[in-house]
View 1 (cartoon, chains in turn cyan, red):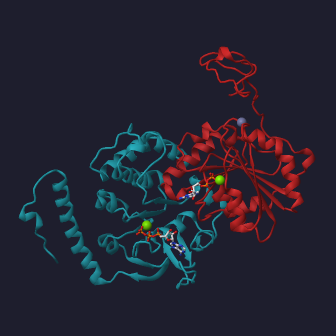
View 2 (cartoon, rainbow over the protein chains, first blue to last red; view 1 turned 90 degrees about the vertical axis):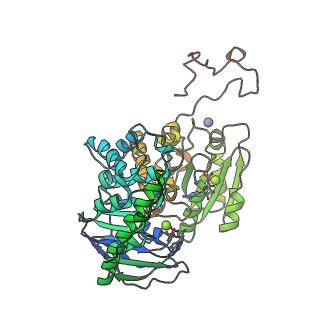
View 3 (cartoon, chains in turn purple, green; view 1 turned 180 degrees about the vertical axis):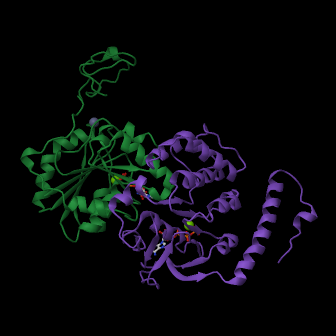
Length: 259
Length: 236
Ligand SMILES: Nc1ncnc2c1ncn2[C@@H]1O[C@H](COP(=O)(O)OP(=O)(O)OP(=O)(O)O)[C@@H](O)[C@H]1O
Ligand SMILES: Nc1nc2c(ncn2[C@@H]2O[C@H](COP(=O)(O)OP(=O)(O)O)[C@@H](O)[C@H]2O)c(=O)[nH]1
Ligand SMILES: [Mg+2]
Ligand SMILES: [Mg+2]
Ligand SMILES: [Zn+2]
């Protein structure tokens, strides 16, 4: 069981100590990590994924339920309570989607192989181009790989902590992903440049020069702004799908009602 | 003196890993470094410049670099002891997939890159199966799921090996490796032996005959589809 994760401060890119005492994230909490490109967002969640113990470039330390995790938890995927979806959209393993998921399910100690079909089915909810069990993972498109990895993290990783690095990229149906991941009782961390995702989480961590600059909580007016943005984002999605399908855009598609 | 044998295919990240080990341990122990390669290697110059430690290289030329390594190892130990080293790190060429340079003492480490493909661990034979520790590098280049798939594959092929993952450029998550090295036993030169069985390595190609086809050769020979001289060929 993961009740909480504690992140202890490390050093910024210039070697200066980070300006927070500890950051604690509890089960059921969703958090977004924002900041300019290169500011250390990926490095921050990678520290969590590796359960860093002062042995990464940021020198941060990460505790599980207030304790230093065992070596075994750090090194054995079947014990690891964390699933991470990286920015990478390329696979090098020369396997079919089915073989890949089967081996991963074994790595995670899962006996039920029905999960492989379910994962491919879920992945197809996130992408417009169908993935089949026989598709080789090395030749999937960026969006297909992303979709498969997200579905894999949700069903096979099935971890109490999920880390997502810029899911808005690669043209997948992000609202579908958000709908499934939200309210799952997990700790969910989104690294994002997307204001919709950033405003959907109650907590925001702002990064700068490799360190945490501040931690903000969503205000009441931001909750309303998030609603407006979602509406806007839905319209953009409809327009995007219309364009992708070769249709032309009519005036009524562009209309937006703000609250 | 402690001994570390590092093997793995070219560009796997052996040197990057060696640099992390040296950086971490050089303040507490004296480290010397030997690079064994076939024709060209620059590691000795690079490491000497970066860390100001004693280094050396050895070219095996026509011989299999692992075979050559066995021949020169006794001299290498003397050289290292002559430099009053506490730890000798040997980086092998990593070209011969039939041999493995590991000895019955010290630590044998195979370095594998995350992007070398899922079947690499099976194809590398003794280089993986006889290693004490497998270090997977370049984890910064692949997804978590793919890392776990590769680890599972290695575990299934070689259940006993200690598996570690790292971004060797940053030296992430290597605490356990440093502990394993620090706690490894000193070697005893008198009883030092090769861990695996080396293949028989003499045939007419070895001595320079260039004609194509098994009819022109004798010694350890094999037809494409046949089993001539099976009692000699031990490639499996
Ligand atoms: N505290 C730190 N100390 C040293 N290096 C750091 C630190 N934080 C980040 N870095 C390094 O800075 C580089 C950029 O960081 P990172 O990839 O995390 O940026 P990012 O915010 O995810 O950027 P993008 O939005 O482009 O994905 C990386 O090489 C990372 O290892
Ligand atoms: N991104 C990344 N690159 C690496 C890593 N380890 C090594 N490299 C790079 O891979 C290349 C080969 O590494 P090197 O240590 O020389 O491999 P060797 O031939 O096995 O000694 C170099 O360009 C390294 O910088 C790693 O963990 N991550
Ligand atoms: Mg990033
Ligand atoms: Mg090298
Ligand atoms: Zn050989």
